[in-house]
Image (cartoon, rainbow, N blue to C red; front, side, top):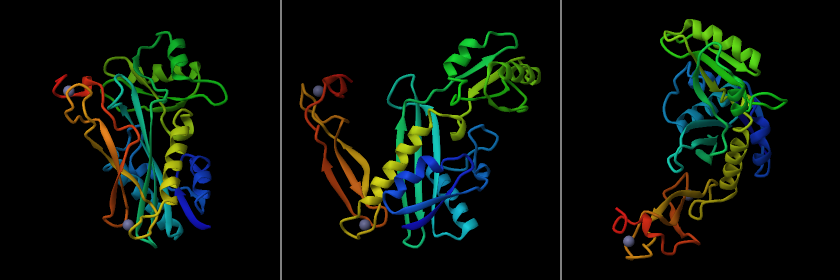
Length: 277
Ligand SMILES: [Zn+2]
Ligand SMILES: [Zn+2]
């Protein structure tokens, strides 16, 4: 087993360590203030693309402990590029191994995130919002409340029941230019149970990559890097954007190999630029 440190403030060790143990890493958490690199609650803007932020977090943990292998996770929540009106939760778990010059990224996209975001006035009924947000119970979701317009403060976090929500709405609405409060899901991992399986799945993807070695240089981290379009239209036979193969690649050297998908046959003409422009 080799030692690795996971930089986290929000209790992600139990989500990430089991998958990494299967590929020979003994992971311990190091409590570093990763919020300086950006927060979900929006008080600190994230600096750069999610992958770079995750790598920076991992390096923070390595610097604090002197351990040569670091891990960190980073999530991005936004409109799904593939499913209309759905929210996509893209979770990354990265491993940085400076002894071997490796950065390996595990990734998982989930549409299972339970997320709310709406403006509320004091006195509005809150029961349906609480219900939709999945707030309450032993492992419920939590909410973040802030002024809806103008003022950036106060920000009330970890709102976990209807009484606390009413109180937070009153405080934040009083500070807001429009007299309303913005209520959103608290997305921090330890307060957001529907995010946690996606983080564990990204850790599993990372473990799968670490278990696969590059056929050219032998370093771990081999895995899919992109897909290639070109499945033919069932009607006219023209190539479409639908993926016909995956390209697998190495994280350390330029080696890449194309692997045809099992399902690479003709696709519905609805996806064809000629038949259905
Ligand atoms: Zn066609
Ligand atoms: Zn290689």
